[in-house]
Length: 151
Image (cartoon, rainbow, N blue to C red; front, top):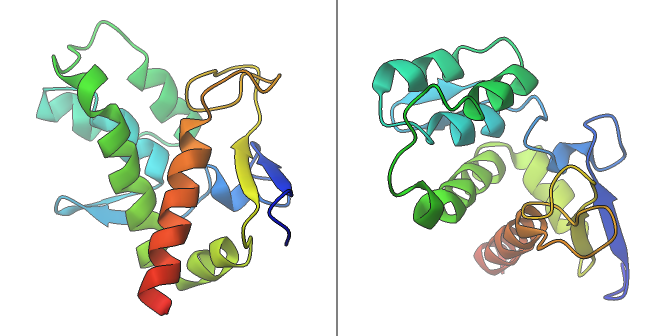
């Protein structure tokens, strides 16, 4: 794949749906198994272990995301400053623990990975490319780490 190529992902049913945090790949982190990287990420927003556990046990990643946006639960004070490192931890675990995903990620070559959605201009591209695409950036970072590890 050429460097100028851009791979958009969002829905788990897309060709590159495995890039999504909603993709059904369980991860083991912090002594627990999380149904998806989304479950882990959303649960880490909260100070309370009970809130974290409720999010971990959510039936779907969409439900976990909804629970993560529920401001009746007490948000960690440091969430804004730690959210990127928490996302990186989740994404690293997903690709370290699933060899098939690591291969798929490496197979994207030098392509730019972009979470394409109007719903999010921080983790995604905002739908028009103006967003920060932080999830795509983290995926490309992890791809580079995998490449170096396999070299």
